[in-house]
Length: 292
Image (tube, rainbow, N blue to C red; front, side):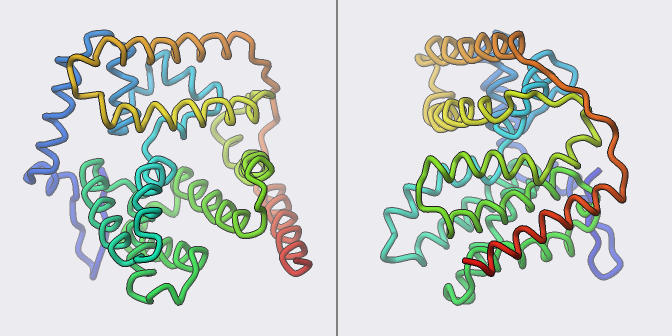
């Protein structure tokens, strides 16, 4: 059960959520999905992609875990940035309306998803930038937001998803300030994020898909489009048939890529080797940062 501690008091967020309109609204939306989409796979796909409703025992969830693309199907900073990107462009010369909108939107969406850490990260980062009037850059605001979240949700320091999310976010922010070529940037993000998180991944899964880089690039574009598309059309019944066909096409693609995948088994890593590994990556980062 998700809890956080402030001033010695434990607050049960789940009990609070059961008594608010946001949580009730989420249940209403999930019920709408059940009424519109009778196909089990389509139903699960939409609930996972839009509301983080996971079924760890389903074949679908196991398939995306096997491909190493689970993060694309769980609402995170990637998905929120897809929504906020056009708003940010619209208010390019007037950033404060954008920050206010993004803070309110992230608060609502995170509330809807039972306080999603990834969305709260964006909320706090934008709140910090708003308060300090952009005197801080995105890298620093993200670090500060991470510390704030750890103070609120102290148990998240043991969460692999939290650690990987922040490591990758900081890496991506740093890369975007150094690399201007979009294709090179996309390639480096996939490769370096994998290298950065591989010791953590190996604690849960010893089998690594050798095509993981290719699949990440392929499915990132597909799922990004489908996510925005479903936000607009998922709850419009006349579009249910075409929505189902799109999702079932992706299902077939996932099945094909799973069948054609090649996996390698990697031995369990030890604490000392992880320390050496991350120290080496940190040394490389410091070297190139000073060089540039």
